[in-house]
Image (cartoon, rainbow, N blue to C red; front, top):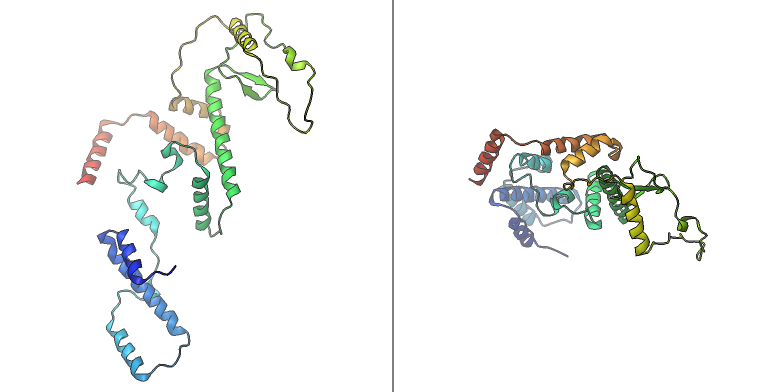
Length: 286
């Protein structure tokens, strides 16, 4: 697909402000100088003498602001860092927003776009789609481990095979009562007919009556004290859980950064901070 100079210039001016148009013009001048320099270096066919003199005069009349040897690409991070102090600049818009700001888990398109951007910044060809699926699965497991650690601190749970946590919310049995909750059920040790030897055999699900009896028996073995209603999970629960289980976040840099962020959320701003924020917002609007 070919694009003329007028179409390119029109599209470029539509996405730029009036203060940025001169940068577009300087870029075009430098681009024309670069192309003209490459064209002059290649052997061309012999032109007429009068035509060559005419082109030389036209070339001398044009005065460019910059030379091709002095052109340097602009650093985009300088503009980004200059806007970080503004209150609106802290809120990215559209594709620049992260998953934490959107409050949703990253999908394949989002992760693949970030991987492609990181690959280009590190002079790599690209990223495969399988890498995005691995990152999504790792993110889900990471969040599952954190939520499991928070919930198991608040309520009772059961353990199978020494490590698998299930049935979160089960009452904790009393140590002063004689109970038989540790005895295996009849369905756990009876012989099972394996239909598919190459697949996994799921455990037989209990019926409604057995589930109700097991729940009633667990409550009968627990302390006869009505626990207080728990509040929703907040940042204080997350902060305390990460302080106890530091191995949930293996990277020290990520752990320290997020712990500082949690400490910031738990502190209230002073009146001076609120006045300064209000003043900065008012100046930005003006």
